[in-house]
Image (tube, rainbow, N blue to C red; front, top):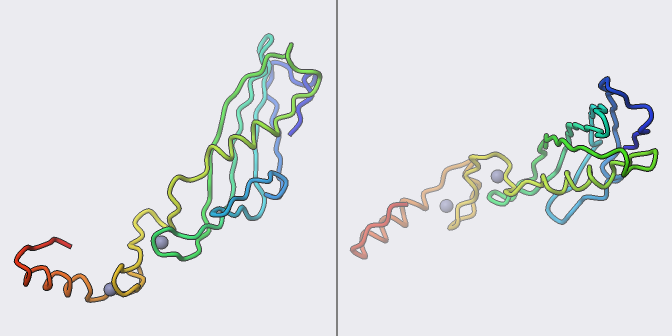
Length: 151
Ligand SMILES: [Zn+2]
Ligand SMILES: [Zn+2]
């Protein structure tokens, strides 16, 4: 996203940009960006400061770290920044700052949903879809051993 400084006055200017995810070069092994990354920015000049406020929406395909299923998630985040016009040579290029913002907002946990039950560590069943008797069996084994484990 490029902003021509002399076009920004004290009135808010809205700028939209829609680029395919590849444009940002941000995929990593665990997160694959799909579709476009949608960016809405509002820019305003106050004296020597260019105030930029942007909202971003991105769609990602992940592999859930608990149940190993594929899931598509939406990332929504925003940032605010100000730039001194004296440091800008006519055009403010936001590419690096926007890209950094996307990288900073990578989800910490890759889960298909926050309460994903995951796979049974014993039989491997997807506990979101089915129940298995493993925890009962394990409980009984523990009882026989004399100590009870709450599973
Ligand atoms: Zn999951
Ligand atoms: Zn099981």
